[in-house]
Image 1 (cartoon, rainbow, N blue to C red):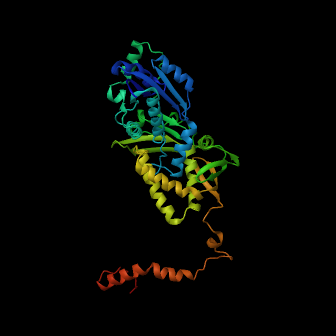
Image 2: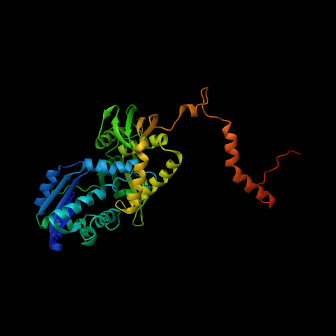
Image 3: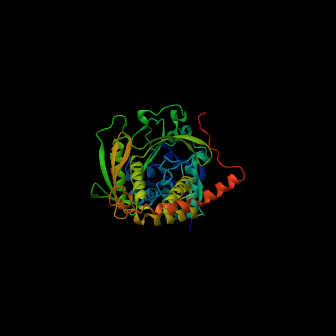
Length: 412
């Protein structure tokens, strides 16, 4: 049974959402339940964030360490799909929003709220991701945004915090808008809104300058059915694999992305991303698929991967279409097991070795040396049959005077 006098707020612990607790209470008359998730973003502890929420007026605080859940159920799906929106962006924010939404709905049910609030603006993708995800899980819940719907701008926030003597220490505002989790980091706004302006060193946190790398780092990643299970021979969970590759690939400046991006809401936006672990793991996973997927299955999967990335970017994580694609992608991974060796150096992750018991690569078929088991005489009949439609069409073109002209290079 929902309570019309309670709402759930996605709470980060910063100025915006701290002010929003009392602001929402004052503007809507509802008591606020603060919800905070650790998805590997770093910073303050969940306990510190919980106590701040309560001190700012929340009636309840729901906090959860969701790092393993995020890595296992969200990042690994993105890895299996080689998810790169517009070919380069590994969906850092897009895959975290459905998880956060799930816990917002869970908290609403637990504490009897009928409304969920988030801190998104009206120009971004995340407002859509939150609200579509929430509606997909529980369509009876309402969703609002204090920034978008209640005119909660930064100057209003600061004045409101002072007037109500909220226990918030206001620090110097970053020139950027940052969203980060264990899968990567997104940086936007400020001087980056002029696409001619190059990134400065202070934009980056997850990666070191690739122009001045340390010595090259060789790494061997072992996968089992599309999931990394060992790095250099030691067992890892998905979260540990991402964290280790963030550290090692990040030290080499791998995973820096500067993109003019097509947002869901119809505008183009300049975005910077850092995703060292995601980029390195996807590079390794794609190469293992090159070995283990049958040709037509592989061709279809590359198309499916592209659509999966677009659907998830476009707030369709819980949609029937995405669920159906998930079933196809999961089926393709049953033989994607083996080891990939990579060199990490100077901004690049380069595969140098592949080894798999389930690989479709057959040395005896591929070799040009003695021991070749491929019957080359079979190619004559193959070419004859394969080229038959082209020959028949070409004969018709010649008959009607439309044949391909070959220039006469005879020297007179």
